[in-house]
Length: 528
Image (tube, rainbow, N blue to C red):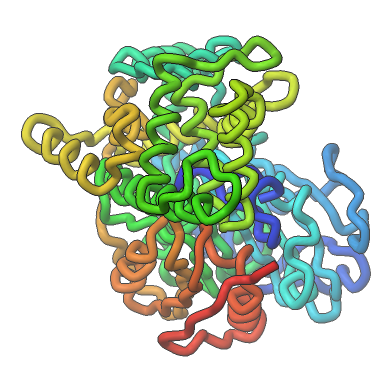
């Protein structure tokens, strides 16, 4: 998985973060020993249909997934190809109208490595919003090796608007090239995207919010044959998991939420906190560079970050033309920097080298490559649905509730105070991320503290140096959930699972054995 801004994209749960990135009955066929599991799944599905939250939803809750070979699954050493399967889940477009239009949700599964020890299904969400859970499973089949894959079918799905589930892709590739690299994004910038999305997708946009996806996830739980949900959510996936716990507290099994979003914060407040985190990481990166030789920012640790920001901002006046004729703008260069700051210190020297080539040789190719990673631009110049899914889902989640008047002026002032270097390039682009001011409809969803009454404790993982989702967010989410425990990772980088063997062990012990981490548990980051 590639990394993107804050809640946008999460590294895969493998240790390679930058560019790679319980309870329940049986599920469908997983190979050896699957006949008993299949029978259990049938019983559980029947029970699920009877316990649907609305009798009109019983047909959805009672459906049985038809698992077939996946078209795009790569062969992975050590994984039985027969255990890698895909299916389609049927859900209502509008849960208020179950008899109306439907959606097909793409699902992928890697069967438990030890079927005789199989506990159930572990549903994962790799973040975003916009990331594909199907891809996270198909292309990260070894990321869960060990106790998790021994005991669980690893299941990923593409939420509404993403991947293979009603993907929202509003702009053509050429228009997007210009749209994402402009250095002067005024209100018309957001309106261009909003108008294009409205023209292509119309009423669909009203049904792409995270609460709808949480309801889809409960239908998936039932179709998998699990009486309760076992779940690992990263970054934005913590918001999805939180809403699930609020919506279905009696269905909560063992949930792990890593890289927490604070559901009580409006989008502008979230962005101020997030860019403050990236500003801190930029300073740490530049100070690290100043201790190396050579460093394009000089040897003064206190001035290095300012010099880096001056160069990146200066590309507004003097952009660099790259080998393929594209232009490295200031906006693109900053995107490349953010791509690396998502990770830990392991990527800092490579970023310094890319900036050095741009500053001293006029070669912007390497920094633009980082920007392409951030923006998910493929080698042939093609974009997937992730960028527009990000906007469509967040606008549906209530980001249309934007500050105005004195509140807007105060928000700009706080952004400038907390993220002076990283926000000065274009304050509006940092505060309105995404820009929902021209969105076609006003969402009824609002930021609010999560009030879950789940009986099963929820594990929240927070990392002290996480620039994208602050450690304070994790603390606040634990307080909101009530029946939750905080697992702390010391170190840089977004989320904890991919950065720490200690975190992976604690998460594994909880998901497999139900061992809740002791209060105050702190983990070191991996090194080397």
